[in-house]
Length: 195
Image: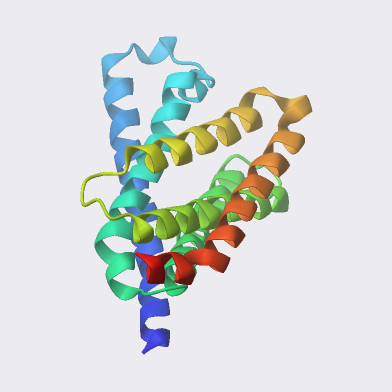
């Protein structure tokens, strides 16, 4: 039974990445149609607005999938484990997109791109899995959604605009997310039993 749920979780992560990508492409297309194409330079889609929008769209779709699909498949530690598996599915699609972009732009494929973005997505999914599982409220948990959006935004901003500090910021973000996930994994069963 758990193998079936695990496979479903990976596929829900893949679907989440696809939904996020389609949303981002629609926003980009609308932005291009509203702007004179000659005014758009290569940094246009790396502005703070777009970086925030990218982070928000990815985290909002993750939130939706965790609430609607991952939580019903899970209990106890599997709230976090299934969320991690969804993060792996999401990361597979993102790695494929990075790889294709690098081929199209004749850039060498960077293993660092994948090795750092995969943990970001896996661990943000894990945070959603834990906090949404223990939440007694049926309404949207804005705090955890905003936390993930801000962390994701900081991560993306550091990659594009803070070259010198980027490695340190990415490492700090991953360590913070990992610590929260490990803590959640260790106490989730106690927390659920006490509620």
